[in-house]
Image (cartoon, rainbow, N blue to C red):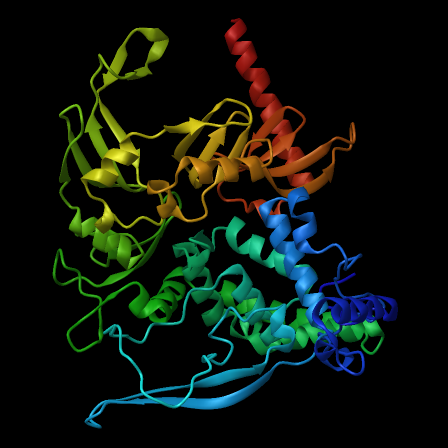
Length: 551
């Protein structure tokens, strides 16, 4: 069975029709079985069936107790879509409802459709009003009693950020990718740091913006939607024997190699000027006339420009460096936060009477307060051979990504400073359920199970009941130890070598050995040979450390 198939076996269709007639009645059953072969996905393989339940009698309600929440939602989607595809069409009447005041001065109008016969909608409800016409209630002509009047003002909103579902839909519209490749496309976007997911929506990172601008300016042809879709067609033609793969590859490589050679000859300054022009209003402020203002605010005669640091990445700096040392983050939002919090902001005092400050640091906004050595564990830093112990009475608490610093008040600051926080006892094992915030956002922890909170704002409102449900659905194991890429087997003992997602970034996992991946290397582009070299370096490093200890 495939996600891009539209064909259902005749035996299954016959069973579906019998179920519809018995459960909903003859009026919901079309005269002939419905066929969707003309609406198949591009290059769908007719040899495979569309995804459907193996037994339609197993309704979602009957098997709900055997499934987790996510499994039940998925099965309900498959079961209802498959069955409704063989039900009678819904019938609508197009209507306009007009409300008129007695003095004829106020007229309210609503246009939409009234359901005449629900058909397949009896099983598959319309949920997204953006994609379907508004459904109006059935009303009769006459006097209306006004019980309540809600006065609301609406403003035109920009298109929402892409979610995983809407991104896949857009890729389908553009003819890019296949159902089997969508998951890998999305994983590359997130694992390589091109975008971060906040509240289930993709937000481009500084790295993503830079790479997009670089490719659009210097590799315009290869990031064009039409080129990608055409290349997909050529690959399909190669599969069907209509195209010679050597000719297609030769044509692609000749043009691409020429483009790469041209870009390599460009000086760094030329590339940065192109990126300044491309990113424009995304990284620079606008003046009163709406034009891009690149004047340095510190020296007043320098020009702001994109600069690159091998350690810190891209940033905005002044052309008069080193005389003028003005720098700011690439993101205008981060720069605004930096300006607004140039000085620490006092939010108030905690329960121990200590001041809580909101500050901006190298890694973003954070809270800082003084700890009481008598009541709290004091962080200690040891220096050479334990000769000196430094006691740090200041505690820093990072603010999770997705929470704006404008929304941080004293109550939220106290809550974040109180983490990790015990929500209550898990009735399944009698262990504490703990709420905390880590590098990958807020999460719940109970014994060997961890569950991530999808909406970052839930950290302030989540209760014990929902926490118990999320922990019950979670799988045992560390939340951060998920596989990014399986590189294959080690040639010596055939044990798996993998790229893992760790607390401090991606790393190589081989048996009990963990090898760090250098920052300049892309984890998704690592080969098995690269991983073996890093594993050997780690072994040599461990050996040298043991020798030093023995001395």
